[in-house]
Length: 250
Image (cartoon, rainbow, N blue to C red; front, side, top):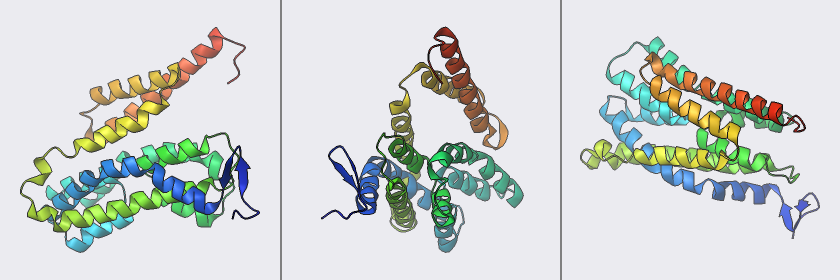
């Protein structure tokens, strides 16, 4: 039976539990794509000289796959600690854009909710969460949907890191099998559904082109340059559309 606090939209009924499980189900394809990525990270981290506890601790407290891979590579080359911190900070600056996008949807929540939402903010959790927040129903439990998705991704990442540290060490040369390509496919799958209008298309094309041109910039700074180029291209295209059709409200 559905309790009195549930909210109906059409024939659907919403509750914290239903939203939580729906979020877990929605992120399953992205979790599958992250599995080889996590196993390879655990394998590489162990062979780079990081201890078992340090590797698990990095996945538990950093929880950012791309920056973790970069950090492991820098540790292997004995890069200075401040430079490792600076590089991973730049790589993760894209999360600032995610956070700004989520603010209108979570500003009413207490700090008890905002802190874990911020900590578990990954590319995958954002893609799934923002898709739910932008659906037209007025469910007050959409943060439970985000929580379900984010927790599933977090648990999967920890488990895959552990598998890489243990089973991954038994498989010869697993890091060179090309399994990390699954993550690239996953990111493409996250982006494609949002290309529904010309500003979004301009954003994706500009960001993709600039990311190739800026690939050689130090400390992965090309990521930020590409992101800014995408934002600027999208805004310019949106403004152009408004001028061509002034009756369209922004």
